Length: 368
Image (cartoon, rainbow, N blue to C red; front, top):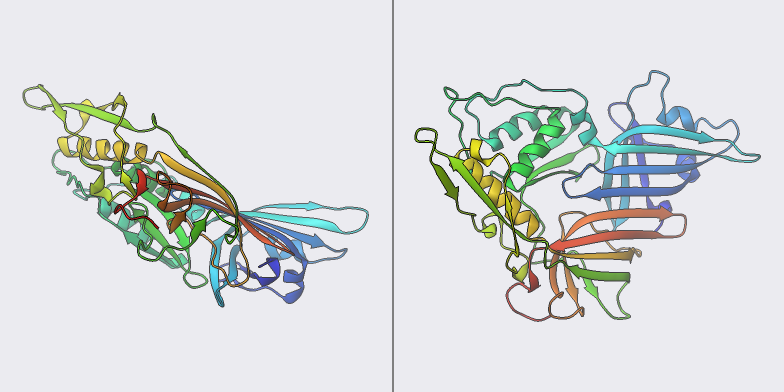
């Protein structure tokens, strides 16, 4: 697997396949993606004298050029990145020069206008998210919104819900508030993307994307795991009754409300933390905030590794489930892929990846 197996589409509005000479000049591709974060890409081209390459990615009009990258995986062409070119750097040398194009995924388009003051009267968090994402269907974005387990329906006669910040900032803030993440997945077809707003991981637990083995048969070049015993916290929240002004402690919901943990045992929290500003929240709002804090801090088992992508193998994507075997009982079992960074050159395709889960050991108690 190498940059020669990659297909590149570019253009203002609807991207189209670039000419063969553009692909031939492509020497290096870097793609970064993570759960709950904006993805990015970096393309490095060989720049011959008199080349028209810069004009293909930087129009005189200054319009944003959409860029789609497809990799060949298992005989299929899979969308690895869909975004817009943002930065352009040209370096001229004694012989050939170099053009470096950097860009970010389509969530950048959601971060261009300040939508502060937009009202959502009587709408749940999930309804607000769906309304915002519907405005980006023109870019091929399809919304996949999972309502949180604890839903607060605001009474418009008592309070008016207003947006703060850009659409992207607001979507991220709403996700953090209820223990969800907002991630944009490119594909499945070129020019399309799925906006996931919900709990993680969302991968198929019955069919892991990759089995990571600690033996010579594995194509994993390096892998290390870490468990932070002090990572998990027990959040606390006390609200004030609006009528009596009495202090009411809110119990912490079970983290499995967001989905069953990937680990067999979720260790207890050894630290306590009082949620700031909880006194102003309703009971449902405080419970949702407690669940979000407890669930995120429970993800105390992490893994870091590097992987060589060989011909026909599918690359890892954030949100997928992978199976680890041979690392020992505490660290074996399923993990969610939380972050990947692809590097493609003329000769190879490598991935740096991060894994995460709540708990120790393989859920279900079985050994691989």
